[in-house]
Length: 334
Image (tube, rainbow, N blue to C red; front, side):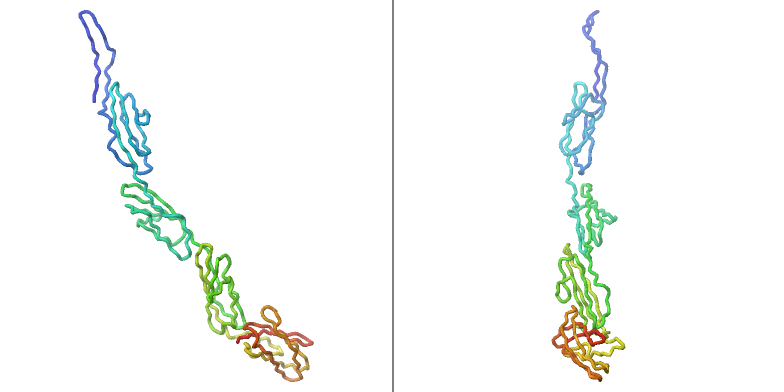
């Protein structure tokens, strides 16, 4: 609206009664227009402008600037004054609900496991950390994963999640070959909550005594549960060779047979001297389990030792005369 003030003179013959000293003043504004009601995306700021050319402004919160910054939803109005004339407008501005992709809490996975990340709502667009745009993401490794989503109103939001993998491992070592006289102690490692070996035993260690299994290939395996409740496994092949390695002491005047022994072990001596021998047997822990004296009378002699009462395992035979002590290993395998 255009307003013009004029000089007004009221006169009588030869007399001026009153005179206004006002000058013309113009306002070219067509009126205030804050625009139609609308919604904003969360986090955006919108500036309302009442327009220039007014003497003063008054917004709903008492501020008096030409412009007003909208940071939250509500009803906003302004009064603009030009002289004695007031112009006004009102607008309703609301905020859309914030998109919430919500990938969940940071997560620890067990080795070999995967995880599908799926934002919690159906959005118009997705942008993952690697540039992919599917509404889901398959996690197969540790790292930081994030997604930015856009809803039907064009509003965007992001979320991220850190994925770790349990680092507990079991290493029983490489497959190996052992002799029938050997034993191997397998160690699943410490730090686990429980263990289960192929035979159902639940210790950290597993002792493989070759004679208990016999010649051939045998697989030993263990599964353990770590502090993250993750299951970890490993296995090891052990081939048991029939060669005992127990009768390879050349120059010895004693020969043991059969080795492995079952009910009885025989000892042949080629010593032509007349001696009394003290024969002792010790188990793998060094405990003496047998002792006897045998007499040799100037000829090849064969002594026997009963082994029927001994458990399967590796034993040490000690033969002592007045000159020396010889020790030999032998196996009992019933």
